[in-house]
Image (tube, rainbow, N blue to C red; front, side, top):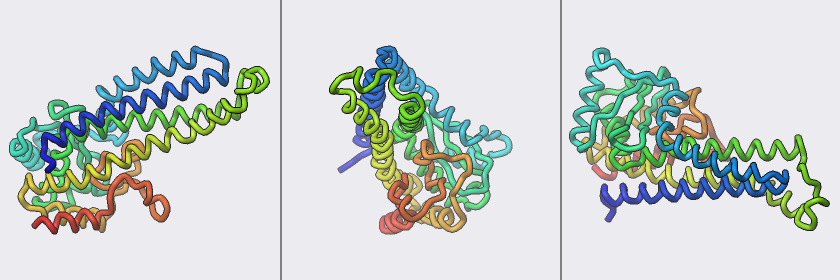
Length: 296
């Protein structure tokens, strides 16, 4: 049976796996295009840049996620009740009290970020603070603190940088093929010329898809686990279930959110429907609510 410690160990292993996959994808892109352009500097640059991006992802991606969503730190004097809720739940969870941020949006949403419990932050939209009663807000905060305690935040926050960079790099490489063409013609590269060109296009297209699939596989399961852990923390599953119902009714869409940061939130902040639901970073709210009410 999974415990807090097995979840933490699992997340640490997945972090190593994610970083490894990122390095392989970026270096692979670099090698293919160094062959296309006959420039080994591209491969060297890809290796150096992938290492730098991993370091930025580990140490700075939480600040980037907060900045992208225009979050500002909550003044303790103006948000005493929220501070007390977070502090009490953090003590119960046995983790340091994270920094608290407010996102200036009427949408109902929240996320946690950071590389570990000692460097964690949680962000709440102004809308969720205003719309939720105490039990519901407590459920939301407990959900986010569960992400902190389980080290989900390290994994999820790292994805923000890695997925975003792979997508941008692949897009740049594809555009460069059409704009500039290879510095070496297919004839210059011999029999492998057409093969390398096809490989470059396929790799550039599949790399962001692979990164997105990793993001989805990690994110969806994490939400169910954080729901159950949050309910256990408050010992009142209905609080979070009711909060998720309100989120579904009143909306969670945030204009500043994007595909790279969407998985961080308690509910998808992106507008979507139809085919796009296949690529949602979150399981359906109805399934999560049903699972919480079964635990009562």
